[in-house]
Length: 226
Picture 1: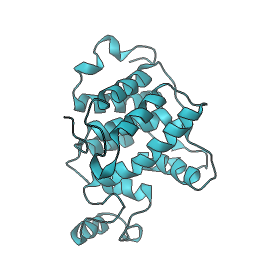
Picture 2 (picture 1 turned 120 degrees about the vertical axis):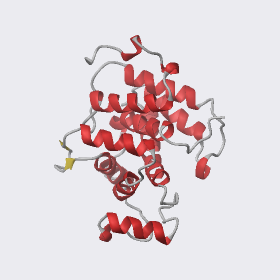
Picture 3 (picture 1 turned 90 degrees about the vertical axis):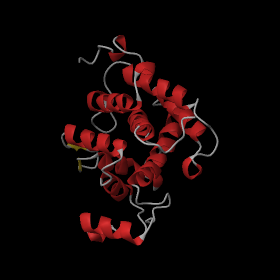
Picture 4 (picture 1 turned 135 degrees about the vertical axis):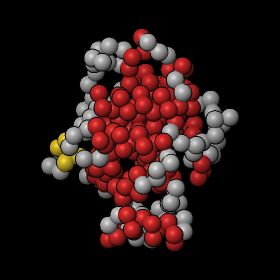
């Protein structure tokens, strides 16, 4: 489908089930923002994100999974949908969504607590067996490693969609010269540089983080719908 042809001419957001919403978010990432810091195409993706924010805002509010405030996530998604790359709102929403992705990767793994520690010794042993043991310590503080651990979860639909995105997008050069091979690589770039003060904010990635967040929400049962 061409960049300027709207998918919403054929179907409305309300007609999509959770799996279809994950797949549509995947489509927007591959079509509109496959490389770091860039977005091209029509307004389908921002519309999708605005609809996600509106839908999620109808779910039970307050402190949900691991005390995450779903109303704050919905508000950040709504701000990002305005494509406010150069605004204070865009900067703040992008930072907020970026830091929540680390929590999502840990929670979706089924093997990590929100603080990065393993749920039990068996989970840690399983991960060490499947990943390089030098990257696996008793507490995972590297978002790239948390992402790799999440991908090991074969029963999480969100993880499956993330794997499909990684497979669909060829390696892309990032600003530091390294290759972006996975979502984990791309998210790590700004997670480290923004958190440690090298860059002010990752506002150019706001739509990308929003689409990843939509996949995490609709591709899991982390938050109650009713």
